[in-house]
Length: 210
Image (cartoon, helix red, strand yellow):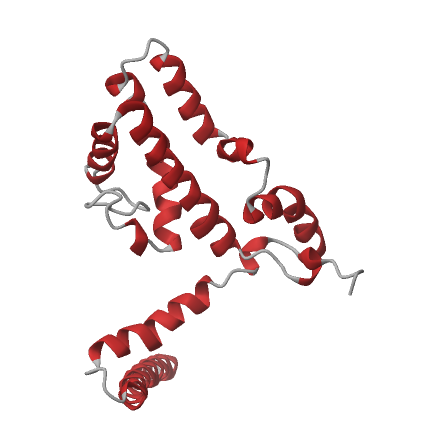
């Protein structure tokens, strides 16, 4: 047991390590830092900026800002990090009364540009960060790209086949109701697939005859 390497025995899960782990720590840290330096007004402005980002292909809409951050999915965190650099820029300059506010703002923006450094004061004591910094490269070399090792697919399945059917039940003897709901959904799904291929093959067969 003393020779067991836990980092080889368990492969880092991208979703829980990065999307729901380090990204989440980073955003919460930024909120607390802005509140300490500038007050609640800067945090509210951050929410406002995030909520007013216009629609654009490939980006999520955050109409409530970070107020419902506990409900964010991994996909939402990834989308948020695409725009967060622009959301935080200038907040410290606008709301801080300190003389070095410009320098602080530039530092925060640079931190998001190289976001790992936001945890430097922790001495890498955060397990997820330690694993990401020191062991992720070895894991990739040993097992391949991390995109193939994520539990996000199964989280979606759990949501579609457990959480949503449970919410639609009356919460009494819910397992039977969940099974019934999922069965109806799967029957409808496979019937649609059957009809699609049946019609597709039929028209293809007719066109070949002509």
